[in-house]
Length: 272
Ligand SMILES: [Zn+2]
Ligand SMILES: [Zn+2]
Image (cartoon, rainbow, N blue to C red; front, side, top):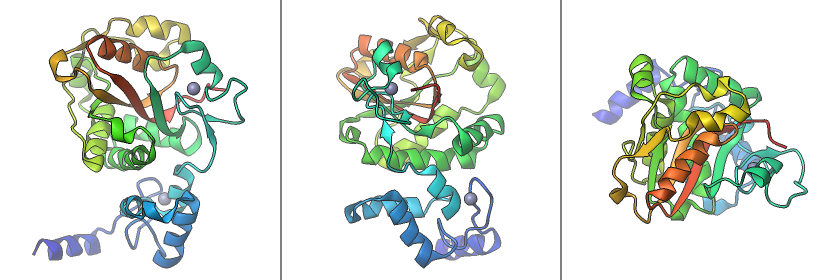
């Protein structure tokens, strides 16, 4: 009965691409045979990743947008996950990470905060677009499963927001992304680990030198006993200078967390 209802719903309201809104005839594609083949080629993945691909094909992206969003082979910073235009002369890390020495162990992103990804993140935040947030979360979940630290993760949480901002805005992109990812990869999600104990200015409006000061001692841990010795994945929408992720990593590590990993939809593009 549920299956019939689901088919009727699909017939009356066919799924549309989360980006360009084109109608998707079959999950994830408009021309199943040809385009699924293209998707696999685009991902350049070996066949044993078929299950993960299958979950991607169920997502609501048309082939055109999907191929633009999925990271093609490129050079990325080992620490912060930024896409680099060329091999860093500093080894595995970009100049930014080399200078800052972040407290988190690794970070991943869908790509740099530019072009299509930038437009999607702005739409997700400004329009409080929940379906888009979930689709972006699913893409990051797939990337997470492919990362070499996926097996280490015990717990997933999100960068917290001050209660006043929560009250005013209602929509919490980071929390919704974290919940989506946790569900997709079947790991515990706990949004209450962290608290934002004072109101901060929007990081995006500040010069990079002021961002660290803005978030200093702004966060706290609610119940340290629950995170002792665990590896935590911290989710946010965008990471630019990394000041917020770094400050939260500091208080998590101080509270007994073993390692902090970071997952963001986009990495601020001011990276070399
Ligand atoms: Zn599309
Ligand atoms: Zn880096």
